[in-house]
Length: 89
Image (cartoon, rainbow, N blue to C red; front, side, top):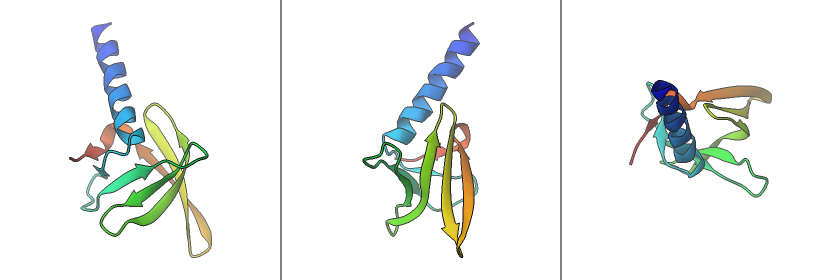
């Protein structure tokens, strides 16, 4: 039971960090990103070095975030696993 509670606390912690806009890196990426909320309650993911829009967020769950972007006129779906993001200060 303690293990399950620790996992739930960890999931809640990483979800809170993401939703609050804490900067993060993807595995193997040197770029730093952050979540930027909008009026509709979802928002977008922004690359912080040049403040450029990367993807629109369509779903925020307990351990995953689904987003999409358009590349050369084609919709590209992106799924982030919050457990594998590296949050930076």
